[in-house]
Image 1: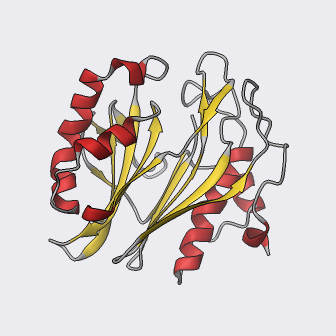
Image 2: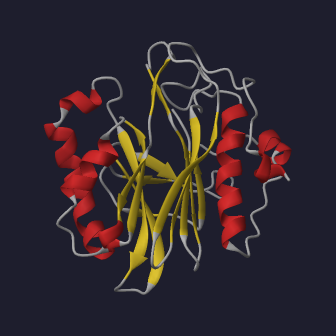
Length: 242
């Protein structure tokens, strides 16, 4: 499965994501596409992992929402309806996770959440038992979250710094987490665990109080129809390591 990082501060919500889409049986790269949907009228952005295209369908299902708080009320039921009604989206990957960020008018702050179509476990195993989050449950996220979390060696290699004091540092952290995930050894956590799966391009999306911006800041030379080789191309955009 591919990678997404979401960072929340009192300045903004930042999402960094890659663009790779795979055949889960072979690990071959089948397409590249954005995994972030925009609801500027609601001061909201939605990132996705899993079944490709679910975020775009959700954007239209939530088009009548008044604001971000209304999105949060409707998103769990709408995601369940999407999976019930759109079998074509789930023929390769029968699950999805959405990462929703935005400005809450009701609580006057930026907020970030996760919703998954399947059961999730959360918490620090070292600190105690993990909590089980039921499918289609709105789950608040910490200020910084990466799915997956890169291996420690790769975090050290990219000089990951969690002490953030500016919007630029928020953005750099999110982007570095995706680059670190690209070179992290595959795990058996999901269907694509035996393959490297982060690739295509590196996209940065930023939501502030008055705007949403999104740009592709880096591309990896990953050929369609082949497995991703993380040694291809430059790992990071030059500005990220200067």
